[in-house]
Image (cartoon, rainbow, N blue to C red):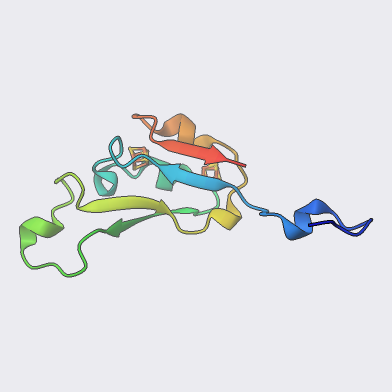
Length: 96
Ligand code: SF4
Ligand code: SF4
């Protein structure tokens, strides 16, 4: 697409970073939450994977994969990299 002169590329382009979390490394985010606690913009969130809890065991935050970390508000991310620095398993990747 050819842009008219004078219109900044950022108007048509994506203006916020892409945040990905390696779920193989971040297995029990509900117990860890280090990145959530340090993020000044409240970008990250932990959610339950199960749609409906059938048994208490399925809600147990100590069991791998029952909860997952995701960037709920990536548009607020300032790329300060604090979450990356605090993560003990190097699970977070941020791309501009
Ligand atoms: S880079 Fe900074 S603002 Fe972005 S998610 Fe991590 S801690 Fe939050
Ligand atoms: S700090 Fe790392 S291991 Fe802990 S919840 Fe965040 S992404 Fe997962």
